[in-house]
Image (cartoon, rainbow, N blue to C red; front, side, top):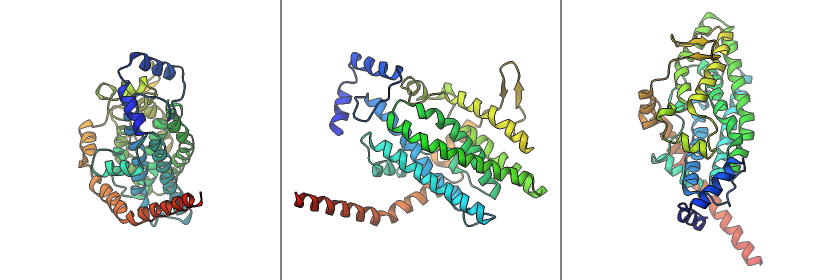
Length: 325
């Protein structure tokens, strides 16, 4: 795989090869791990899939601490299944990234030393049970908006991983909306709790789509390569247009005084999130950045003996097979 990467870099300046690669992309063909690809295409995929995988794993943390505090046994079982799903999503995505010549250990080390990021949304605290509902409804709703188009992305292993992930994320979004529905139809205090959760998570959810297209440094090339299928602003608009009617159904108020339906273009005008806050959170200064990374570092350090044991077992089996031959 390393030799393939060197060959890829050496031929990146070959205009005929680059044109042939782009022609395959434009024709809707899937690029597979053993196919030739530009080094920047590989690098972009590693960055995007790696950050996606890290987000699935870190995303377990704000919900995991509510498993023991869920209000009913049924809610506990549902939340436990959801957190387990997120671990599986991370596994599928790490496996897809490994086909590009980078190991899961390397990806994790890049997260822990700051070379890779995860979604900014997971650096906000879950203060009440309603926040778990808001995460399912808004955060997983935004994730679905981002991820459904990725089933058509140009890199085969990534596209195939997204098929199951999207099916499970749909379940997550529905369970979150169901929590909000129950709370909005409950006591006055529960309705207030639901509104407060929406107030807290509305703008961080809009940040999940990334910076405005004019400020995005990766979007144009990623869309040309069909690594991304839609622009950040396009997906954000679609999310708002879909989610506001759901908030109305819940009889909740979206915390945006500038929110207004425009009949001519069949969409809402809305206020963009605070991009200074977004950059601060991405750069490690959010409410829970330190806690999230500390939890990942602790898990990585304390799990070293498991990784060592698995490697030793694999080496032993390999030696047995060689001896048998």
